[in-house]
Image (cartoon, rainbow, N blue to C red; front, top):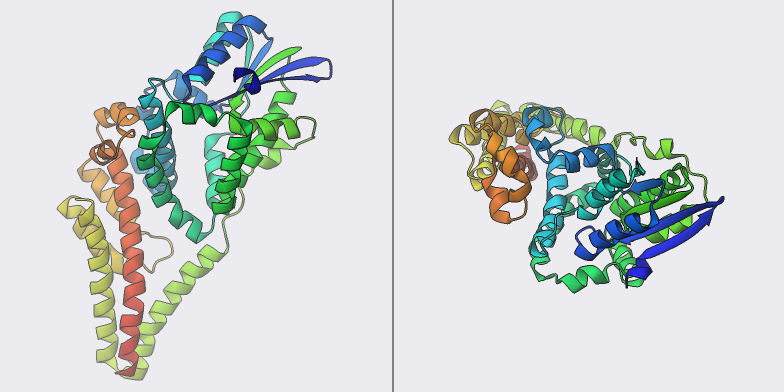
Length: 387
């Protein structure tokens, strides 16, 4: 089985040994360590970027995260998605007694032990996630959170032989095709672009003998792109923000304000005041309910409710961010939360217990409930135009 995951390529007088691994497989980690020891390569390429490499070398790096800064920079959704992905991988890994990314860690350690140069061949994870996020449509983003949560729950049913089976090319390609049909924006960025990026970095790696350690899902794409010229600088650029989003946001703002003004001129002052009153009550109640569902602090619930009537229509403010900042100020994440984060993301209970992940869930839920309140309030206030 292992030989199917070892590919030897002659390129320009150099020998490239491409190892396809499962990121949570014990056998894969052993294969990587053994191959590097036997081959004694000049260079070892690993499917890691600088930030992921540092995370492996510095397991307590989470303590340096400024959660307030994350919220202010509007990166809470991306951080939550990243943690959910890590949770899915960790849950499988815990069942098999191996750390996520163990094969990459062993590859780096064995390369350093044998004197081989280590090349970080993957694109920065933040760039990958931002490119994926900005290419996704609204409904794709909306589906992403529940589908990932379901994946974490369903991972209980995965057996070790299922993970090993993922390393077989046919089964893996089938899985990627299925995933690509469901969410092509994500597959294109997470898989296809990185195949090209990894292939180019491996082809440019120094030395006559190179061992490249990558996830099995990337092997077909790397083999296909290894002889192609790829401008990796283009793959490192962030796509511009969608113009539709700001247009929709400012359009919503203008439409709601226009409704209030129209109510004043066409239905009278009382109708206009009733429109504002019911808009305030419905959006405030929806946002407050979202905060209550997450068992937020009473001051956070009040903040969500009071900010919602304005934040739901203001293009530069989100109710979840305002509520999140208040919750973070009241229940500031402790050092213990950062230390326990790697363990807590492995279970739904841990996600709920840890103040960091709970804060991110609060932001997401309040934003969703406030948006729901907006859609409920609009048809409700429109009826006052005819009163």
